[in-house]
Length: 354
Image 1 (cartoon, rainbow, N blue to C red):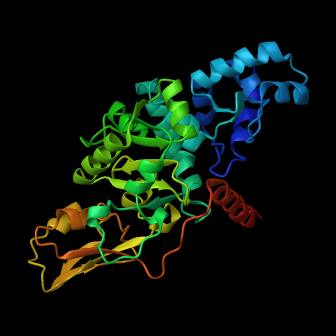
Image 2 (image 1 turned 45 degrees about the vertical axis):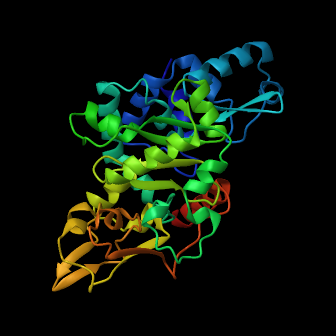
């Protein structure tokens, strides 16, 4: 089969809020060929971003439903498309490259695929991540690092939202795993990618992640905090996932730490760190542990709030408790739903077209 169907599928993926843009090298087609067979691409081309039953897809496309059901389920199990089970019905939809196909490949990624992912990131995908200037993630510190007098709404906290989740899964971090396979990366914890609700069901049913309870999820968050990982979820009030991101491997964080991009391209900071200079002993623990180097010593310790993610890692490492993590007065509240964020990103990208 020619590359035409793969290019068509690439173009479909590129219509998603976080798209899948073409490159001069064609590495994005190489990636699709590694993940999808010719027949699987043909099936994927039948899907839309909106979930449908096999019957609905068959009626719309004219494909025989009995064959289609088996093929769709096989592809869902391989992490190539997304599946939802609701009210006794199974529904399928196209999965974006990120968050989606990329993360779902965590169990099958190998050195060759890691190399292709890295090449694609450098050639096109980093630019795609930040192109809309609408952050895809919100950063939330753990409660013990937040100043206790703060008046918090449910979406400002992690632990209560985690305990409310219907199902929870944990998987390995695809970003750190890719970096390890490429001979780079760090030694921070690997099994830190948390998903909730329908996303958790998908991970559990397909063997991408394992099911855990709220206590273990919170323990993972706390361990990640001690390891200096930033707790970032989709920039919405609904809790669908939590990535625990390191500054050296995370696709979004690298845009800030390695490329020098404005944090707002990727991360919505709801909080900020405030240093009590009277209590500060200038031990420089915060300098060493801030993942984005937002703290400096200029006669006194200072926080550059334009860089600060509000992750709270500095507060957790401060031996004298001199750092308070507080809600930003000028914060931008997350979107109500992930779909609302996606629509806003698409609108912003339309404005960039000549």
